[in-house]
Image 1 (cartoon, rainbow, N blue to C red):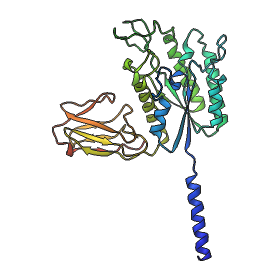
Image 2 (image 1 turned 45 degrees about the vertical axis):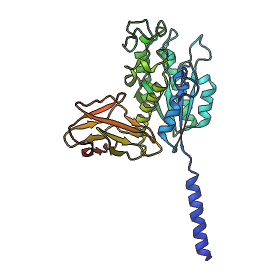
Image 3 (image 1 turned 180 degrees about the vertical axis):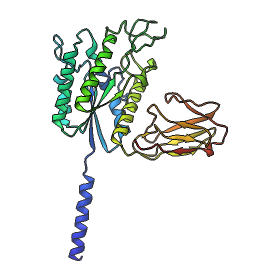
Image 4 (image 1 turned 90 degrees about the vertical axis):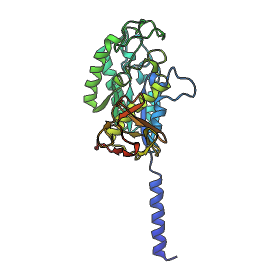
Length: 325
């Protein structure tokens, strides 16, 4: 072989090798029992596991949840501060590119102290920043719902228990402190450039997604992962597979042929006269599909079967991409 050709071939091989060794971006899900997966049975997917599937092979997503842990360090509550846990040290050693924080629910009990809450939350953020100065931070700005409370009486965030469901006897007084906790999270977020998202409203009318009123079922964990993925996809401008539209029988089907999730928010399904604009963190999982029925009205709730009002054939529909986030 000609020496020049050999050297060119060797350089190309080395270049390919370097490209192949590019590491996935690291995502650390830090938090309490919801991140840990308390209440889920063995084999049922925790929200970080579902998020890992949605993010795809370009991301290394790991869960660092510890039940009962708080953002603040309170007197008489030794060991509850997340910063004192093994999981916190593991998350630091991971040196994540992205930290997603779900902390605050356990802070709002009888030991609530606004000053210590802010101090502890800031200490955690500073520690993660020290671990990777280039890391980006995301957090639950509105905390997940708490359906605990006496039967037939309103419980945070204003829902009532059906008679057929049994939950804990009270919310432990935590509901009253949540608004203040969320305001303090927002204040700390501004200081540390944390992107906040709403973990409350997308889940606040689905008590059936909770094992005991506070900890999500597998379906609830799946929805939390979708909400999180929607925030990351928009904020990080994540490259996603191209959805594939197929006409069905009395419906249209949107397939995800890729190995990561697709966020449809902002996309439009239209027959030229009738249009369904996807919203509310509508996500198609890898190798999965979304079926939209063609019927007498439009259904916009992505947690229920979608339906668009039209008298036209499924073949008349087009899928229009959303504008870039």
